[in-house]
Image (cartoon, rainbow, N blue to C red; front, top):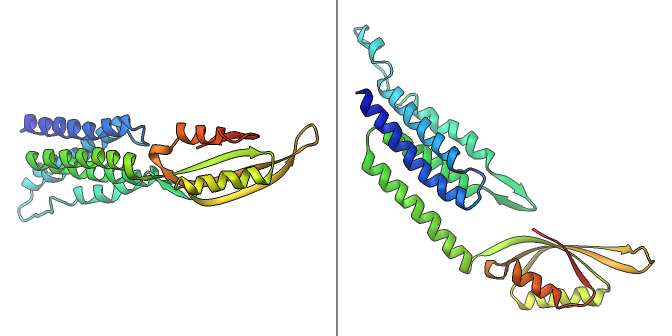
Length: 222
């Protein structure tokens, strides 16, 4: 029986690690080691919940127990780990997909721990398909929240940039501007914006776009 338990732990770790590798490749908050350990721990808790107290119960004549009593607490406990991957930054919530991935990885570990291998493998395949297909769709059709900080010599330049951004389909979520003085006494404007822009236009295209305007300097893009 011990060999069977070790096999369950091994399979759970492999399936959790497969999901973790995808998250690691995407440079997400929780990667291979986190998912590996979550799946392994969940499977171990399930095995312990089902078989860990047989010796004690065998000594009691009329004792009964719920085999899901420990495993049910895993569902609650994994919420604390998932919450640690969710951050609120610049009006954008990040890490929800990774948190959901940890949650389903825990479920897969519990499933393997109970001996339902085919169901666990099927769930893992569905998770990987969902993550990869979602990434493919979002890269081509989705929007990305970015923060842009640039300086311009005049209000006319800023208005021109804003008009061009709108023409290119960018949605301006937040806009802040400060008038500043340079060392030589000239006036310039520091602009901070939060945009929703198509992922295909992110980084290089946006940088090249802002370079088209004279007297406009990119300070930061996040």
